[in-house]
Length: 339
Length: 160
Image (cartoon, rainbow over all chains, first blue to last red):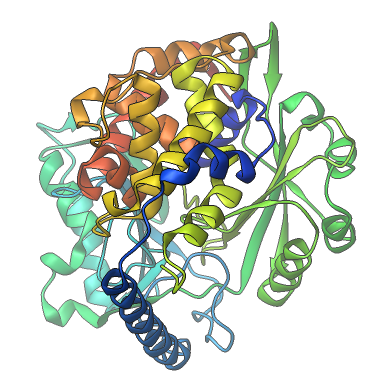
């Protein structure tokens, strides 16, 4: 999806969510009544054995997790593990960008290739190097200078006579003649999508400086906040006032920029939705996340990107969302949920 | 699972998730009151019939299937078959008629997957457990639903 990403749909659904009635466990127990079966000693022993085994597995996994935290061989969602070394250099010139299908898989793939050889990718699909079952987190590999040229040439050569327009929701840009230009038509769409989504599958070993997949560790995060319903979102001061106090303290002194929005008819009005974003170092982002964790009732997400949802503190019942996106070397934030 | 059996797991699940169960089930039953009644009854049945949980899926998925069976009016204590999954719809469409219209055009399976994702806040694996389909199928279903919604919403709303 593009502007209608997973998070945006979640916010729109949240606006339609009905109020719920109070919990009452005693009522549940009363309904269950006295006919509940008592468990045999054998079943109870099995449950205990299973619990012990589960605990042992969990403890073993935790021990391995403690070791692996410094090994960045898998993607992560949210903030990097403590001690993770940021990708270098901090900035880079983008020479190729692909946003499109993962042939043979589902979901979307995003790939950014830089002049310094870095291939940074993000898939909303399972991967051995992925962060979870649905998103890989941002990953990094590295091409040789020749490898970068081969990839560029592949895209440039795919255009020309006989090319057919790319479908909606597939975006390719390539640096050609010193400028990053959009590719609007290619001869063999399936082939170019497969090659850009997975360069490792076809580029020769000699094209890679380091083909091993690692996590991309940014130095800066874009931290964005917005509200739903969006009436109050047009002006930053009004939006800012809805944030939890902890977020106001940490974001108050930061310059901000405006992320995309859209116009929609809802409740009889045309409205714009904006997110205001500030740039935070990893340590600042870590401090903000820690403060938000302690800020009171919240819904914390994290399958695709770290995000928090709060009830606006003005008592309106509106929802405020704060999400964290890693910056990429060419100075844009990754749209982790786009697709 | 805990050493104390399923009772405490069910109570913990109820305390953490009963609101999500209610939000989702309102879309099936049409009212908050009846949705709450279904949730209470589903957890009560789960407490009563603990041997019905075979442990080959998540506890929450099992309770969801019980709840859907009750909400669908299915008889007996067996679990709900996939083809018996209930229809879901927004109760108050007037708050976002464009989204409501787009969601109405989704197939039944896509629609329930979308509702489970956004009202019940379930992961792909958990949705698979509830619907009795593979996690990859859930991902594909939601991806197709997203694409369909994006197409419909961008047609009816002006991107800037």
